[in-house]
Length: 204
View 1 (spheres, one colour):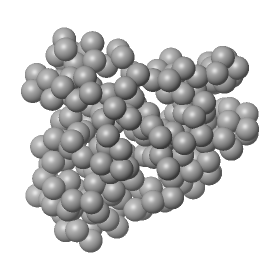
View 2: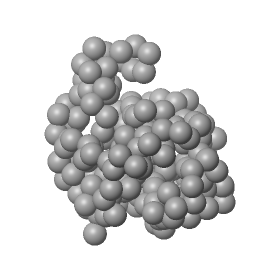
View 3: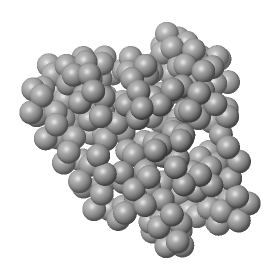
View 4: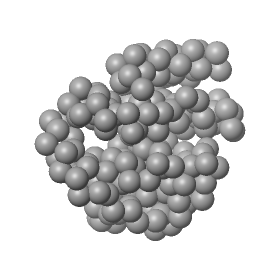
């Protein structure tokens, strides 16, 4: 039973631009109060930070959903210290990962493949072992949303800003794609990442 979904900025920003935020908690059988995000993102959304938002509407859309989320539970000081010494993990990623390590029923949703590789290649093996099967990449999330709703809903959403994600750009053409092309392409990206990140990714 998943207790909490810890989501990084990259995923939330992309979902806001694709109009798919409302699908996030239900894809894991959760409510918004069981979703946690970095507090700094709410501040940037309210300011309509042009560095990360392509439109004020996307920022407002995200801000509204962030108001429903729960706080990030505190991580263990020992885990935080270990993660802080890892190259390619920034402060926000450390906070989310430490919170995930502290709750064995939490899931980490990350759009940062560099950080996932760092967890395997730069952290002690014990860290990756504790996160075994508890990390979800954005391609997996899109597959889950498509299975729960329809492939058409996901494709129509990402077409509005398909250039924001390299996997989406490769799989979804400017004119869209078939259901078979979508699932085949996304599955290929997931399996490639799974090969690079050992045991981290959730089995979906």
